[in-house]
Image 1: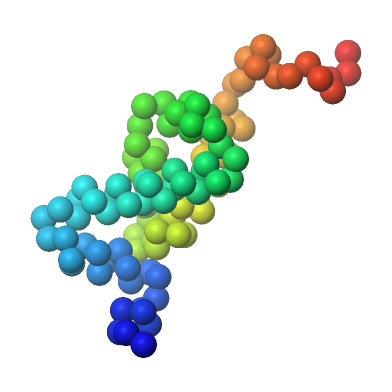
Image 2: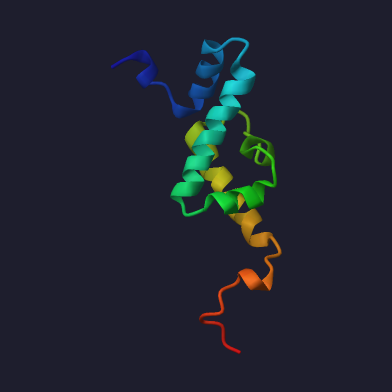
Length: 103
């Protein structure tokens, strides 16, 4: 078994930062953002809904990475926070389907 296979998932952001000197400021947030976007789509968000929640921001700006949070942990947390933000938005009545609503 390789040494890096035995490391915990929480150590990966530090390892990635060490492997990308001078570029970690841009690549690591991008890695986290891509993972969160993929997780959101997998969990049923549409691209329009993601855009609505983010309102022009990057995912890592709207939902910052916490400390040494692993990519997988961040993606899960960001999607949970994105769902909370989406549900908390004031959705106009015309977007709510008329089916199943009792008058």
